[in-house]
Image (spheres, helix red, strand yellow):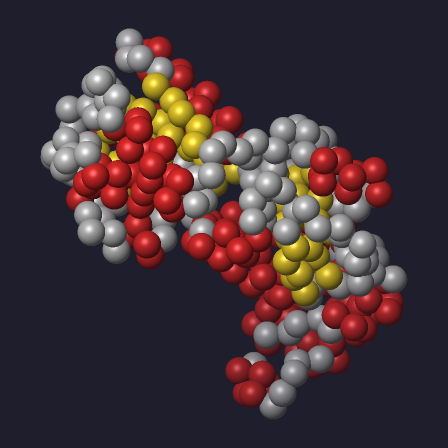
Length: 333
């Protein structure tokens, strides 16, 4: 089979010959159509995968009247589009989504959420949707299948999200073991669903431990200078936090610089943990502890659920991907 892959693009006929079935059976097996035995579908799909078969987007589009294109939106509407390229999480979600889309025979197009989605497309993926997201709602009204990376209230969209209850408790327990008694959560001032989830779990943990519920949303968090100034004001308080749980790469980097501005040492005076990993936080002067969100898996799962809606008329799904704490120097005491 490997030799067959080496001769060029594997065709439907190649799969049919290898499986000793008709091309119609191969097509029905891969598209979920027809009335084939489950064992036949599974065997044909396995052989197609082993051969490296990829459906032709153009041919499939002509056959079923679809465009073969999925759109992924990555930005809250109030965020400048250029900021997208500085957030590793978004890039990793997009990479996973693009790989899965390609393997399922679709192209992936990227559009900021505030752009008009007038171009024809078969499905929408919204990353970090807000509660009752307008974009997801407009997709529902158009009858366009949708999935989200982050929870949504829409019953018409699939969603994949992290296990925030577990990982927030893990982070705060870690900080408490390191001696923190005044942890604080700082996040961008954004309606993104993950911020609401993390805030809820942070408040619940503080209530269980009898700690003050210290939280702050930072306007302009994507702007390094503005974020640094905002965190410096927090650390200049007469009763400053002794640990920061941070909701954005740029904000975590700004926090480390702000601590230096006011004469605090990381981690001796101030521990730091960021939500989401990336090169910038890993290579910071004091490498920053992170919550690994498995962003590529999130992107792939969102596409898989979306394509199931498109091709199999599946009901919207719900999946939770476990996250875990990666401890680095910024929170090691």
